[in-house]
Amino acid sequence: MNIEGGDAGDSIKRFTVVAPLIIGILIFIFILDLVVGSVNIPLDALLQIITGGEVKETWMNIFWDWRMPKAITAVFAGGALALSGLLMQTFFRNPLADPYILGISSGASLGVAFVMLSAGICGIGAIFSTIGFIGDLSISVAAIVGAFAVLLLILLISAKIQSNITILILGIMVSYISGAIVTILLQFSDESAMHSYSFWTFGSFSGVTWGQLPFMVILLLAGYLLSICLVKPLNALLLGEQYAESMGMNYSRIRVTIIVTTALMAGVVTAFCGPIGFLGIAIPHFCRALFVTADHRILVPGCILVGGIVALCTDIISHLPGTDIILPLNAITALFGAPVVIWVIVRGTKFGRGVIT
Image 1 (tube, helix red, strand yellow):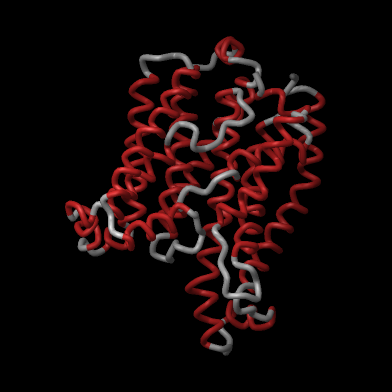
Image 2 (cartoon, helix red, strand yellow):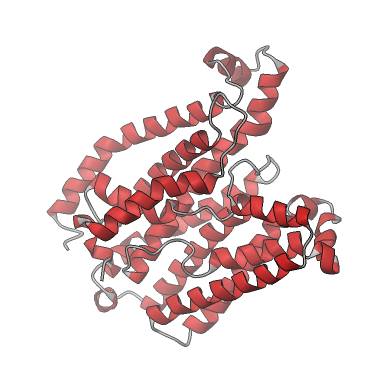
């Protein structure tokens, strides 16, 4: 695979032509997510809201308190999940790798379970809810702590173990252990706590407030920046670890950076939005097919844009415009992602072979 050759140059030219169209689609879907829902907001009213004109107070509240933070969250979370999946698929050279393959999501879920489900057992949840500012972020803080506890474990072990397969197995085992602890906590929790935790596992872009949004955006932008810095090493890894080292790259440092970047983005999205499935595994393949390349100079920005578009679309569908019904977000993402995964397994993709062993 010649990443730096003429074919890659043609792909970059195609991307520069297609990128403005994709950005336009992203803006259009973003606006659509703002105006449609259980209460539709006319476009002229939307302009009045943005410019500070006089409109219905109901529309004003829906727009600023609900839909705007939800749409911004969907854009950044979708891009982060897509990037995380891309990093993991390249790192493990496995087309079915996703952002949560290292057990990051399970660690975050365990942290949330301790806050939500342990209140009736030992009062831990009550502690988080009574410390003011942190109380507003208690679920997110608990998820981040759980995610990065798993990350620390992975990094400590990866420092002594060079095999990526071993790290993969370790992540799976961590997921099993976390799941087992959550199951035990569920057995000792009251019905309301169980319901709250179950609702969190459905995933949602709607729970992020204006007070929480800056923290999420800053952390995800840091993940975006790290991903951009990893473009050259990721292209080298398509040809194997030995090739990357022959190019003068420090593979151990690259591996740690990839793991930390993935954990940062996947952990933050899980903390603020819940464990959202399938976007991370499906969107990188969709981008490879769309842009006809495996070059990460194209795939990294492409995943950010396409991830935002798909996340916004799934958010719109989950809210069933014109009705008061809200479907679980993970059900919609599965309907999008599962067919892509099936297609990869059955047919494979020409430009995905760089990450298939």
